[in-house]
Amino acid sequence: MDNTKLFKTLAKKIEEHRPRTTKLLKEYGDVKADEVKIRQIIGGMRGIKSLVTDISYLDPFEGIRYRGMTLPEVFEKLPKPEGREYPYVEGLFYLLLTGEVPTKEEVLEVVEIFKQNRQLPQYVIDVLRAMPRDSHPMAMFATAVVAMQRESEFAKFYKEGFNKMEAWKYMLKDALNILPKLPMLAAYIYRMIYKGDVHIPADENLDFGGNFAHMLGIDKPYDDVARMYFIIHADHESGNVSAHTGHLVASALSDAYYSISAMLDGLAGPLHGLANQEVLRWIQGVREKMGDKLPTEEEMKKFVWDTLNSGQVIPGFGHAVLRKTDPRYTVQREFALKYMKDDILFKYVDLLYKVVPPILEEQGKAKNPWPNVDAHSGVVQWFFGVKEYDFYTVLFGIGRSIGVLSNIIWDRALGYPIERPKSLTTDMLEEIAGIK
Ligand code: CMX
Image 1 (cartoon, rainbow, N blue to C red):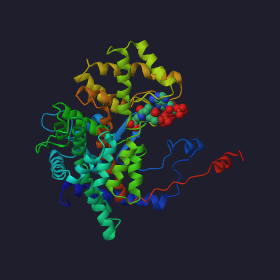
Image 2 (image 1 turned 90 degrees about the vertical axis):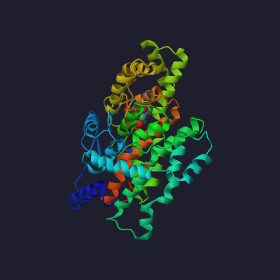
Image 3 (image 1 turned 60 degrees about the vertical axis):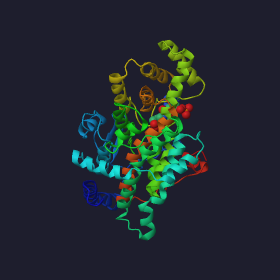
Image 4 (image 1 turned 120 degrees about the vertical axis):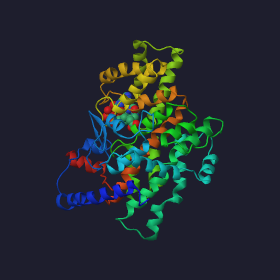
């Protein structure tokens, strides 16, 4: 590993970066970056500036940038497999880790490492097979990752004599072992639960996204759908539940297996990654009532109001940070307009895009009435034959792991400490508020 371009570039970047963090901490440690209001303390720490990452930044109006690049720029600049429309996922990992757009040669080196490391150990397959078949795919996915913890190089390194400056190298080793196995695990879970337990072996010639499509048993252009999906879901700053959980767990010097398994558990919540499954469930509910017909605008408005009036959220709409249509939604919409514009479910999504924002605005609760990534992802999967919507969050999880792993490698490189915010009692808050 030490001879790879990825390792050498990352090592150089880390060396260059460390003095910046040290200087900020030592010379500017008392400078105020934010102030905290009671609303934020009670309200899920919303918006409090208290994390640092250079991997991605989420602007409320522009959306996500990876290492300073918008999603269209990422798609344009990263090398692509011959004749394919979307880039190598392996190239995104290189970009997120090093901040540099890799050459094709640099990407192919990562593709090779991933191929060497992707084989699943038999004991993980045994663990999956021992789980009841009606376990949620996300529970299976997270279990499989933590089951592999015994392979952690980071944990061995800690046991045998830990050195803070070297820790990132072992986190990187773990990442390079975990990441290539995730699509293999996901494909295994998918075919075990939904495809009669008949499995398709990996193809030696295929990359991360291409091999995933192949192992699911779906033809082109699903390979590009997989690449696009994994890339758009990779990172969304550090404060979202999955990324933050990954960072928090790793801050205790738990290894990457624990950290990724835990972040997947957070992603499995319906207010976060599970929303993609919920969108499809919601749309199918409407479709059943409509007897397969597309509702009129008025009919759709009624379905939306009925959901709101029953106290539920409209899945796929709203966001804690974003204040406009999520560019991850737009990327998928553009794909859908190209490949599936006459699809009935796409027409549902299209109609919801028109109908939901004004209703949420009229209701006056949601700070952001616009669609997020999850409003679109299910229908694209459905179109290509992945109709088992319980599985959709697993796809999100594969993508999100790329960002979380990149972040926790850098966490160790910069020696970020164990996370430990302070809590107050309600009495104390009342005192601060001047009530008592
Ligand atoms: N439908 C109905 N009500 C909504 C809403 C929606 N889509 N989005 C927000 N609201 C409501 C909230 O439930 C909240 O109501 P209460 O005051 O009664 O609790 C109010 O509007 C204010 O919420 P907010 O500040 O706008 O949003 P939050 O930062 O609290 O929550 C999110 C953000 C995403 C959880 C929320 O918008 C939501 O529940 N959306 C639907 C679920 C979803 O799509 N989640 C996926 C997000 C992307 C991802 O992480 O994958």
